[in-house]
Length: 99
Image (cartoon, rainbow, N blue to C red):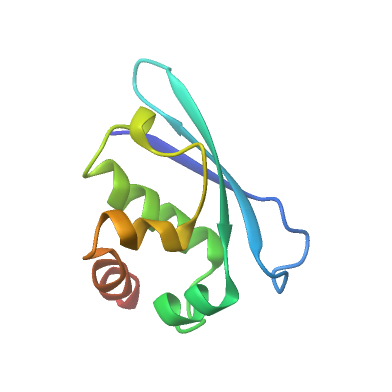
């Protein structure tokens, strides 16, 4: 299983949008780096404010890695773009983070 490290690049958790750097590493020590933005609207819709932005980004990468390899994940994107490629994204993530 891949190791996912999420780093907030926004000093202020209320920043709009929040910015994150995500590193995904496999057992063979290959690594990819991704820059992700997260709007306050998407954050609220998916978490209800009950989880951190980092938790949402990590869960989103777990979702993506179940569907594609780390090298297929865009290097830079807004989290809202996932829904365009995977229509089930928001329902799956909302349900997962509600647990």
